[in-house]
Length: 177
Image (cartoon, rainbow, N blue to C red; front, side):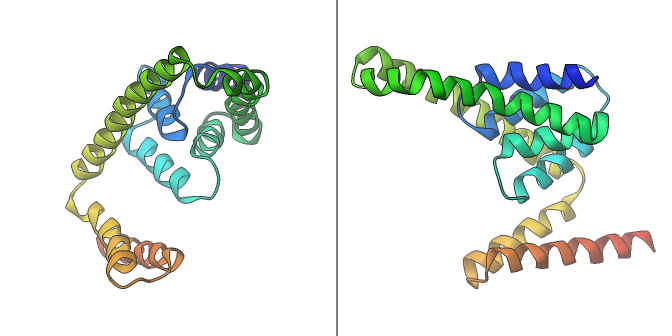
C-alpha cells in the first residue's frame, strides 16, 4: 500500500464504523484479507501489540499497519486517516445528537448500531481465538498466567503482563534449542 492508500484505507473504515477500536479492527481485517500480504499470525501479533499498549485500539492498529507497509510516514498517514473522520463527525454531529437524543428515530438508530457492533465484535473475538488456538495450545498459557495473576492473586496488571511476557520468552528459548 502506498502512503495515500493507507490514509484512505483507514479514512474510509473510520468514517463509517461505529463501536470503537474493536469494530475498526474487524473492518481492517476484512480489508486486508483480500490483499494476502500479511499472514494471519503477523496480523494476530499486531492485534496483540495494539491491544497491550495504552491508547485507542484503532490508532494503535493504524500505526502498526502503516509501519508494516511504509514505515514512519505510513504510520502517520494511517493514524491521520483513522483519527480525522471521528473528529470531524463528532465536531459536527454532537450538538444535533444531543438535541434530538430523546427521539425514537435517534434511539432506534443507535439500537441498530449496537446490534451490528455486537456482531462484528463477536466475529473479531472468534477469529482471534481460532487463530491463537491453531498455532498450538502453548499460546494460551500467557493469557492464563495474566488471568490467574490478576483475578486470583490480585497482582498489578502491568506486573502480570510482564510475567506473561517472561513465560513466552522462556518458551521461545526452549523451542529454539
